[in-house]
Amino acid sequence: MIDEGALENVNAIFGLHVANKLPLGEVASRAGPLLAGSGFFEAVISGKGGHAAIPQHSIDPILAASNVIVSLQHLVSREADPLDSQVVTVAKFQGGGAFNVIPDSVTIGGTFRAFLKESFMQLRQRIEEVVTGQAAVQRCKAVISFLENEKPFFPPTINDKNLHDYFRIVAGDVLGIDKVKDMQPLMGSEDFAFYQEMIPGYFFFLGMQNATHKQLQSPHSPYFEINEDVLPYGAALHASLATRYLLQSHPEVTLPAENDHDEL
Image 1 (cartoon, rainbow, N blue to C red):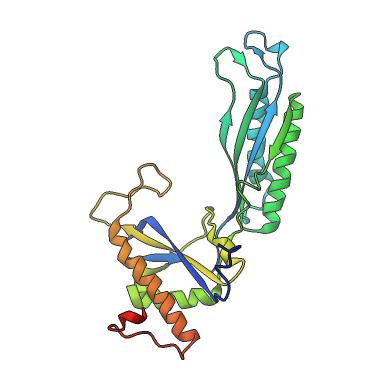
Image 2: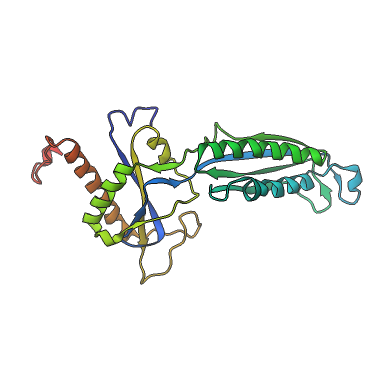
């Protein structure tokens, strides 16, 4: 959308995300960093396959991959500033297909996240060093990819301070100021952040949990369900944020009357 010029002559952009644990009709967000920057990695660790009963004739990539994964966890627990939130998670491990065969190779993959660009790039460098170094300790070779073409690095989602103040006023008028909450940053990532690199942007969460109904599951769960009662809230907020912003930014603009259907 950016490449196609969708943000040309656009002064501001707003986005929302439903929140399964936030009560219906409440919103939450914050100024500054809201969501982390993220990247992905995949590594193929190669050894020498063989029979599990005679491991001395093999070079075990499963053992090497296991050491790699343990060592990757030290990047956050022992190298990162505890006050600088970072995450390294290995969520993919594929290797072998039999109980008694050591495979030739193992593939692992995962994600890394940080709020600061410097921390993010440091994690990237250290992930590569740990994967290749630990594989070599176990006599294996490792080839790592950060999948830039398939899964580009996401920048952190950083909410504009002026838009935060504006959002609180508009959301307070629509929902009541008691329904507008501040929240802590999350380590999740959002491609909305690409827009915020181009123009001022603001991202917020909209609650949809009805206290009289069952607890809704995470949007990333296979059991996710949307409470459609949230839809009017989202529509009203987006419409109010847009129309008031336009009127404040361009006071000479007047909205069409309700009966001016031909002009809509």
